[in-house]
Image (cartoon, rainbow, N blue to C red):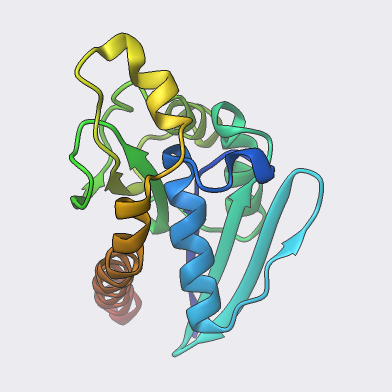
Length: 189
């Protein structure tokens, strides 16, 4: 029987300059999961990726390194090469429409102005992937949003990140269980 294959993607911008930015919430969550699961990410100029086989599932981890707006190429390439359909892809990203500390899942739909999601949907040819939206808040004036997402989490927010990472990991485990159930049902037919 074939293994279930799941791709978990963290979005962000490469480089030390962006490391603690709100826009890098996806990178931060993915790094925490990879560390927790004992997955080593191998870096190349265009991506960091890793893989682990666990409980009959092949988990692929990916951090595209061509900046947020060009995230789609790496996602589409890895998913096609390994036969991972959009519904088995989870993209973790910052969400300005949610206050800091709010995490929420969404499958499919629009990109809400998030250029990383837009590029992934275009390159995959489908918006039918899952998203884990990590709230980073929004400044009162929407003209300040670009500067807000490219600013670092403040000291108080940094102190809350470990708890939020734990919540994100639980949501991801729930998503994995759901994918397993659907995969089992499809395999039984």
